[in-house]
Image (cartoon, rainbow, N blue to C red; front, side, top):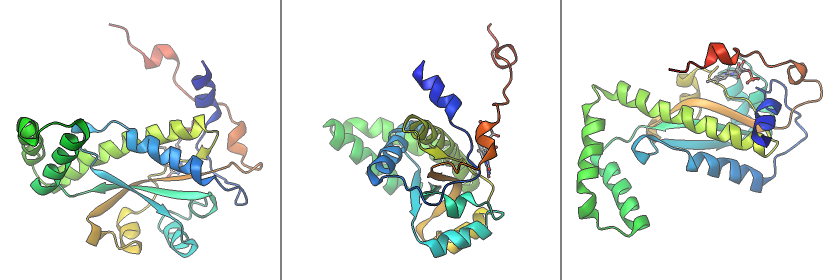
Length: 210
Ligand SMILES: Cc1cc2nc3c(=O)[nH]c(=O)nc-3n(C[C@H](O)[C@H](O)[C@H](O)COP(=O)(O)O)c2cc1C
């Protein structure tokens, strides 16, 4: 039951303690959890940015409706769609599978065609980016759970203007689209939200047994 206690403990932190920093090893484990997250086809069409520069964090805050988590949390992570859907990138993924599992790439040619068929079958780049964004949402959930288990606070955020954040970080040339932010750190003693009971549906409203 311990993990349910962690799920109760976590909350979307509104006010972080600027003085408390997350240890680098703990941060690495949280990012590692994201890397281990499931993605469709295992393709991992995303990258995570760790924004260390205070100047950039200030600018990103302006593009995030001035939400203070962006500047006050110990670390600011941004989950981006990696919009490289080219056959070359799929081939790189197939090589990674082959190398990791010591398989011959030829044996994976059916899988490779399947991935190219799936990606190519989506009507346009917008739909491909939407598909990839779903993988970012799964990943942030995994990372938030890792945070809670580490007793690190976090706040999932989609309250920002993606185009502005992309411009601030010059992401277009990297073919990246920011989808979600995850400030991580430690709650401020004054953050009243930590004391509020969770508002959730009852189990009967949430679960239907067929
Ligand atoms: C995808 C997503 C986007 C969110 N965006 C924001 C945000 O921009 N700012 C914020 O303060 N909270 C944001 N939240 C937090 C939710 O408001 C919060 O998770 C919800 O009210 C439930 O409360 P709890 O997480 O504290 O239990 C977001 C949550 C999710 C899942």
